[in-house]
Length: 387
Ligand code: AMP
Ligand code: ZN
Ligand code: ZN
View 1 (tube, rainbow, N blue to C red):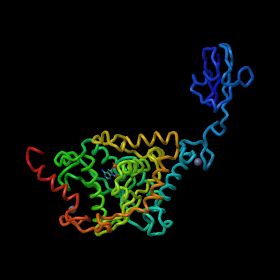
View 2 (cartoon, helix red, strand yellow; view 1 turned 90 degrees about the vertical axis):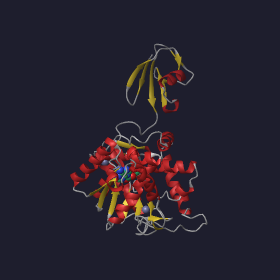
View 3 (tube, rainbow, N blue to C red; view 1 turned 120 degrees about the vertical axis):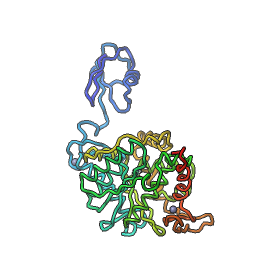
View 4 (cartoon, rainbow, N blue to C red; view 1 turned 90 degrees about the horizontal axis):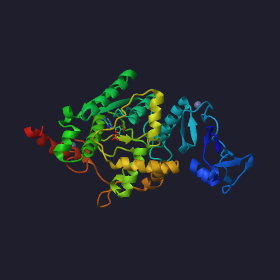
């Protein structure tokens, strides 16, 4: 039989006889989304169609037909986001991304309606963006500059072979092309080890050594250069996956700190914020393509079988059948649970920070975690056989 399908218009040859239900199943068409018309008559699921029948499957769900249009200007859309039930042209998609950043910046942690103290930062602030060469952090830097903020970049050379060389070059080119200031810190030169050598020497995971080192250097560079706030490119997918991991393991000490804005609470500590927490991975990649931002597409070679990726896959699978699931999960936590959590020590008292006796950076003990890690790594690397 000849079967005509719409949106897109096409004709399929399907052998008969078979029932309408069987035909729809064969074509993978959901019966509730179409009318089946044979010989000008509507037919039901049990009706048998002969081998010579001419059949039309007519869609009944309106709104899906025709070219998709931009919600702002009705011009042809180039990207859709089911979570917002919206589509945009390139220009208005850029506006959408910057609007979401603006919302994040103004809300801070969403407490108290976003007064000046609750905001992530203001136009007068000196802003430092940690850029990895990936889509998120470069898009963030680009968007902030477009929005009129004063933002410099920081790239840390982690010594991960060609991957670090290529991501560093991308950040330098980005800054140079736009006349922006980029701080460069080479871990080997400044601190005497790299992510791979530090990981081997301390027998800790590369991601563990790397994460601790990066967080320390972010704060250090921001403090040393008088920045008011330090930003990272963590997006909605990153934060939802981290939340999922923290909830699965009930990591209270991490849940407490999973906020879009962490104020400075001690000496030598700078405020930290994640202005992309309302935007997905896919939205950030699209922003880069539309804005012509070159970024490193390859993933860090040291990350494999990371739980973050598994949680991202699980959440994306949920998002497919339930658009908005990721955002509901994360924003619900931030609105309802996070405000009730605060950092406490074992006695239930607020945690007090002191200066690390070795480097002066904030810590709860005598030596900060970074100095302790580095003090373990350097003597091992100093042994000739270990180099
Ligand atoms: P990741 O830890 O790789 O998921 O990156 C999270 C965020 O940390 C990025 O969006 C950047 O803001 C920042 N970041 C990661 N790697 C670097 C790096 N090598 N130098 C500076 N910032 C980085
Ligand atoms: Zn438009
Ligand atoms: Zn220290």
